[in-house]
Image (cartoon, helix red, strand yellow):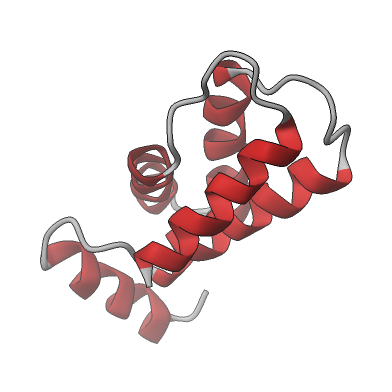
Length: 102
């Protein structure tokens, strides 16, 4: 991420609870992963939390503060997993959350 992109992210965060472009991208990335990897198996809340941490950390390897912010935004926007949801069904909810965040 360039210095300009980091500055833009900081401005978005300073404006309040408005999602960043990164949050939207991470929601879509998580949805794509769930669709591609065992979409018919049950989704679990622990997977939602894991994906938030893993994707944010991968995106911001050298900046823990940005990774923490991206993880927090992801978890705010990614709905809580309900019993009986499959990974594929949950991916659709992540797609919707990403669309609503724009």
